Image (spheres, one colour):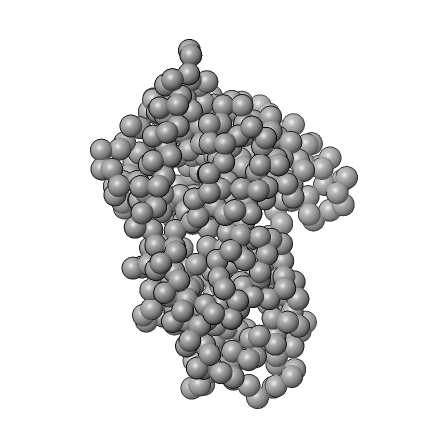
Length: 411
C-alpha cells in the first residue's frame, strides 16, 4: 500500500509532530508500506522524516499561499478581516493554480492508494489536487466550528473524504457538526514515551541567555508556538501576580517557543519582551527559542504550564510533559480536559484566568512533594494512555478499511 502525507508547513509544531509519529508508527507496524511526505519547503519536518527512512518530497508553495489563513482575522474587526482574507485569496489565484498543477503532478507520480492531509490548507487542496478515485483521509487537529470561513470551505472540500481522524472526543463532536456525512474516528495523539521520559533537562538559562538561577529556584515554563491563543500573556500576568504576592519566592519563568507558522495571529518576540517589561518582571523571565525536539525543555522545568485561552483540540504539550514526569498545569477546556484527572496527575485551571493560574503555580512552587507526586502519576498516565507503541497499528487498521472501501465503490 502506498500512502501519501501532505503537510502545509515544514517546521515541527504540534500537528507536524503528530504526522511524524504517524509515519514512524506506520513504518514500524508494516515495513512493506510505501510512504511519502510532501511539504512546501525543506525544513525540520522533512529532516526528521528522512531520518526515519521515509521518503520526502518538496513541492514549493508560493509565499502568498503559505501566509494565507483565516486565523489572521483575529487582528482586525470581523467584517474587515473577512474581506481582507478574501481579497488576499483572490490575489493568489494565478499562483495557486500553478501550484495545484505541480502538486497534482507529484501525487500522480507517486500513485498513492490513499492521501492523508494534515491541516486545513492541505485539506482544501485535496479537493482540487487529488484524483477522484483516490480516497482521502483528513487528520482533524482543530475546532473548525470556531472558524466560520474555514468551516464553510471545508464543507465544500470534503466531497471525497472517506474518513476524518479526530485527535480527541471534543474535536470529533465539533467535526460531526461542521462536516455532516463524513465518518469520523477518534485516534488520540501518541507520544514516544522513551524519548519523552524523565532525565537530564536542557540548560534553559543558557538557551535564554541568562545567568544561572540561584540554587533552589523553581523553574516554571510554557512550551508553545507564539500563536496568540496559546496564552503567553496569561502566563506573564500570572508571573507578575506571583512576584507581587511573594517577591522573595525563588521562581524563574520561561517562555519556550517561536512564531513558526507563516500565517498571522502570532506574537513576535518583541511583543512578548514588551509584555514582560510592562509587568515589571523582565528580570524573572527567560525567552528560549523554539525547540524542534522539546523533551529537554520539559525536563529542564519543575512546572510545565499549558495556558491556552481557547479550547485546545488535544494538547500535545500536556501529554509530552506528563511523559517527562513533570508537574503540569492545564488550561482545562476542549481536548486538553480529556487528558488528566484534576489533582491526581495534573492540575486544571480555568482558561485565560491569570489569578487562578498564579495561585496554583505558587502552591506548586512551595510544595516540592506535591510536584513530585504529580510527576510520578503523570508519567504512569502517559505510559498507559499516550504510548505510541500501538499508534501505527491503529492508523494502519483504519487506512486499510478506507482503501478497501474505496475499491468496493463503483467506478
